[in-house]
Amino acid sequence: MRKVFLSALGFTLLLASCTTPLKDRNAKIKIKTPENWTALGDELHQPFSNGWVKDIADPFLPDLIARSLAHNYNLKAVAAQLEISRANTIISGADRYPQIFASVSGSRLKRTGTSGFALISNQSETVGITFDINWEIDLWGRLKDRARASVADFQASESDYRSARLSLAGRTAKSWFNAVETELQVRLAKNTLESFEDNLEIVEERFRKGITRALDVRLIRTNVASAKSNLQSRLRLRDEEVRRLEVMMGHYPSYQIVLASELPIIVQSVPSGLPVELLKRRPDIRAAESRLAAADNRVKVSKKNKLPVLRLTASGGTSTNELTEILNTEFKTWGLFGNLIQPLIQGGRIAANINRSQAIRAQTLADYEQIVLKAFREVESTLAAEVYLKEQEAALGDGALEALEAERLAWNQYQKGLIDIVTVLESQRRAFDSKRQLLQISNQRLQNRINLYLALGGDFGQLAETVIVGRSNDERHEK
Image (cartoon, rainbow, N blue to C red):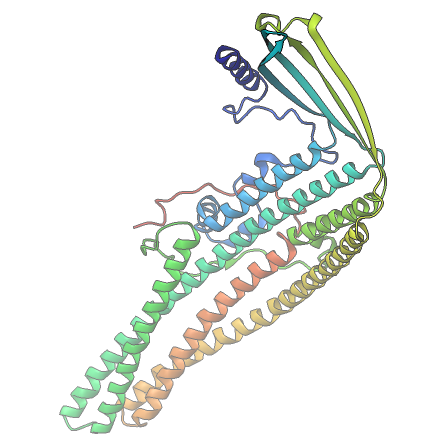
């Protein structure tokens, strides 16, 4: 009997290895995919491609974005979720097709009894191989609608992944600009401190000669101390921004990125008359559309659950007393069965499922409308801010030039004894503040331009991602 079972088990394993090559991860799936399959495959994993990167004259930005897309762990999690959705789509579509199973069996039966005064013992052995087929006939398209809903879910996951890539690219750019601004603020703070210290030496020398009062020395020393404190604050902010950027790129926050010496300029101006159709490419809007389509199909499924279900079951194989005859078709057996199942009373489950699916559909529609409205608000706000920030930057630029000249004049007049130290300190404070604000507003313009690209889902004329930017170069930004 052991030989029979071992032989049967070996045959089963052999059959399984021939039908399901688990070790071959690249083997094609035998199940036919559902209708309207739109998987993009490796396209989603290509380097980030969007024309807006070229609208900003920053030679480091393409590599930074490429490194973030390659190593960011949040994006990897979204990619894994996309693969889960892909698998769920195939699983859902599999119910539309026949399910085939193979089994090998073996048994030994012994019966002992008496006939008169004689003891009778009968022993029999049976081995067999059976193929079972189960198939639900999709009379009303219920399984087809369920498969379509799963396909729509997968399309939504695709759009979510695109949205995550676009968002990560934008956040990388914004974090880079923030880090560069902190570097420039540090340099400004150092230059200001050096200038104050030079002025302090002059004032102290004048005090030793009896030209300047002790109050002047105290006040300018206060300025120096304040400048030192401001420098340490700027150094701390720079450290935070650089480490935040490194984590975003999937690197250990070791403060190894070399920052640029200036903020980039915006090459492309915003064209007038941007078409509203540009919003159609936004990944979050596409995802909302796909989820609405999935909800529509699930409403259909819930209603069709009230209809009869037709299932066919068939089996065939061989059964014999000899293991060597297991493949002999003369010992074949077969059977064919059909079941028509009509739901009657289920405690209100079907009606509740219909109500639930309709409520989910209404919720999904409201979410979709809110996403569209939010998209319009984001575009309108960033377009308006583009104008305001540009004018503000120009005004601050003029103010910074005037403040620098006022600081120079105040210091010259102080040395001649025409004004007091308070006027000098005030002119220095205004000059420092104007330069600091100018750096901030220049960064805000860059941040707002990135927000505009994110709001539009791309650059100003690109309806699809087609331009591939440069590949990663880890050595360029590392010390």
